[in-house]
Image (cartoon, rainbow, N blue to C red; front, side):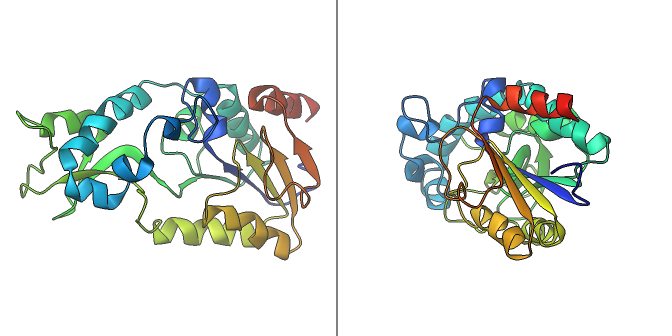
Length: 237
């Protein structure tokens, strides 16, 4: 399918980063939301109502994410792009690992931990500089205007970046093949992207553990470890 496709788009979710030591959100027993209510720590209203609690929860996690390295699945996807077999990666992940692995065209539809921005004036700071904004307090404060600084990730209650979703939709509209890796394909609006491609006559391949709503629509469903499956695909190519 990859050989035959003139335009292939890879759509990734949290499962592609699990081999890098980053837990996904919903796996029973290990998922991030197993131990905390996401609406208490990951909703835009929670950020504004108790910013100190938000940063107490997320600051160590962002610090930990910043130290993670790409795994062989990320590198396999990057190699497919380097070979001219993949046009772009559309990812729900905020961890920057696709870029670190060498992928060039990455659409981060849920934002990224790479930067944080002031909610008042828009001043942006890099991930390495956020800790300097806390001073003696528990809230990251904008050095330009004193406003509250928020990571540039999409929280519950926020709209996805319009430009990113437009790019992702346009890619899926022209694709011959969508390869979904490590995603349960349950979180909208991103979960609607395979339908965009299918409705235009594209084929769908799914590489992820567990069921997805698109399993019956997929020409291929691989349910093993994402690293093993993607390595096997590279070998076959």
